[in-house]
Length: 211
Ligand code: HEM
Image 1: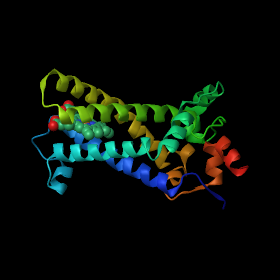
Image 2: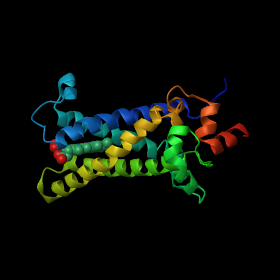
Image 3: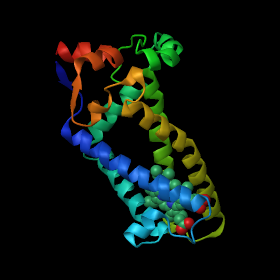
Image 4: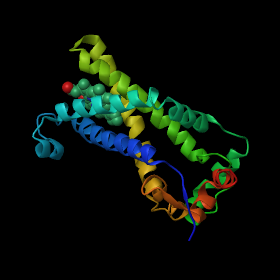
């Protein structure tokens, strides 16, 4: 069976750091948004810390990872953005066929590093995370008043926008849908089946094999 590498070990560790932080932030953030601040969440009980403390410390961790991305990882971050904003007219056909292809695996062809759906998800995820980090850092420094109220509202709405996209990303990337079977290996383990790459990222596979 033939395999191909899609992401370096460093990229896979970076991705893991981001998603652990985001999952902890979503869990503690939703706990606070639902007004449960007085009751410790399971995470707060395990760590012995208040939910607000777990949230804030993890928030600083995420802000730190974003800082790494825009400094030492600036080239990779630039490539990620360029590959995510690049759309062609033919991608429309990919979207039309997508609902059925999720089950059959017969996706329309595209030549991106990411498929067109992934590109939309990448942009929404990155945009929401940037807003959450910006407003979160603001909330950490402001004690009250109108500034806090506005930032809190922005922080909440960005959470509402981010949540369904994260859930969709997890469902698709886990490979439980028949069309996306095998894709989890692309970020976990590092070795992806060539047959999976041909189905989901045909243009990227062609370019990589002919380098
Ligand atoms: C995935 C990223 C994040 C999500 C989903 C998220 C979500 C939330 C939510 C839903 C709340 C509750 C708002 C309310 O009370 O209605 C909250 C509060 C807060 N967040 Fe975040 N957040 C994220 C990242 C961050 C970051 C990066 C920071 C700072 C570095 C941060 C700092 C705060 C602070 C200070 C509060 C107020 C806590 C309090 O009430 O004392 N958050 N967050």
